[in-house]
Structure formats: C-alpha cells, structure tokens
Image 1: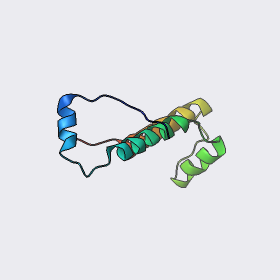
Image 2 (image 1 turned 120 degrees about the vertical axis):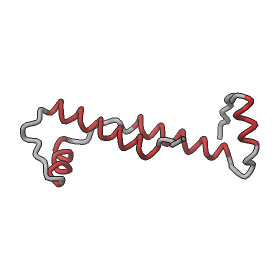
Image 3 (image 1 turned 60 degrees about the vertical axis):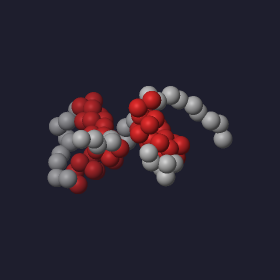
Image 4 (image 1 turned 90 degrees about the horizontal axis):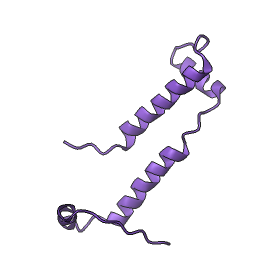
Length: 90
C-alpha cells in the first residue's frame, strides 16, 4: 500500500498527540474515501428513477423541465452529503 505524507500545523499536531488511541491514518483514509465517493457519484440517476422518488413523496414532475429537475436533484444530493459527512464543530 502506498504512503501519503502531509503536513499539519504544530498546534494541531500537539492536539492530535493527546489522543494517541486514535488511529489517525485510518481516520484520514475514511475521510478521503467519503470525499472521493462524493465526487465519483455526481452522475445523475435516470429521470425515471428520479421521477419515482419524487412521486413517492407526493410531488409531480410533469411540469418541471428536465434540466431543472437535474439541478434540484444535484442540490438535494449535495445537501444530503453535507448533512451526512460534514464535521460539526462548535
């Protein structure tokens, strides 16, 4: 397995050292995988699948142009990704 090296500020490194039980390489690997999934899965589902999902929620897409539906779907995916994968801080 290849190694990747990166730098962190001294103060961050000191804070990380306080938690020696955390496997930082595993954490970074998981975060990188999540970000890659986001960018690799930007393809829009088929319009029929999108229509089925929206109709199950009680909405009709008959009057929405395809381009607008794609735009809305991408925005929904982005919001879901942010809600699921963002690190919440105070």
